[in-house]
Length: 256
Image 1 (cartoon, rainbow, N blue to C red):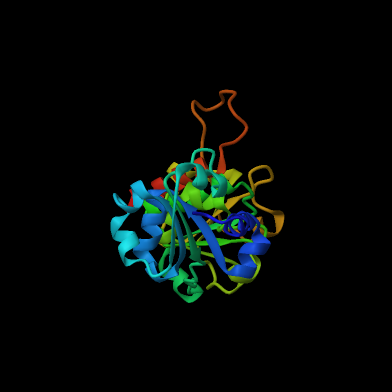
Image 2 (image 1 turned 60 degrees about the horizontal axis):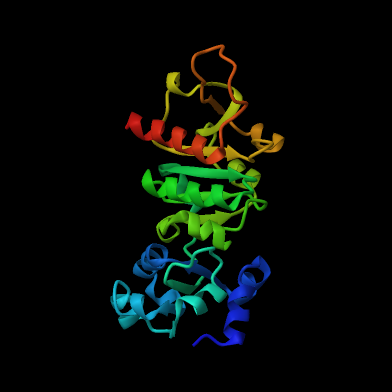
């Protein structure tokens, strides 16, 4: 049975302030909880689940989890869940403190997010990075919190495999070797499909409404544009940032 205090504690983790104080975050659903537990089993601090999941698909997790386990009914889980339709299991995990080694970024392809605000977009971009084998995402300080429940849910478990770090982007860019590839999607950029692309570099994606900030735009040395088709046809003003990220990453990987 889930106590009122436990429900209150879980609800508090919907705020960044509480997550920062407690050093934990909430994950929901068999897929998300299972993926995070598989990669970081010692990070699980609380497991709230129905008997159906505990005795079925979640049997291996519940048997090996070294944490408090609370068996609940579907109705009780609904009182604690952040989802409209709870998915059998909710887990509280310690934050995944896997630091990004910035000295190693020059040998990899890395996604950089400048002011991405929508939790769904951030979660989807983490999932995209996972799909295309991009291990690190660097976020500006004003990008949405990776541990927001909506972000965690949108990653569909990819948060367990992609490192996400927050830092001042200008400091990061200025620390890189001269002429290191810093790609950015800009309306005035060159056609993505006609440019030479490297297997290392930073791919900068900007805010949903304003795009890449002026200060960061000045530091981009390889401006790219996703062309619309056919040329000259009146079309949408822009693409969703997560969709644009997927298109750009797919083209980079295709070149390999």
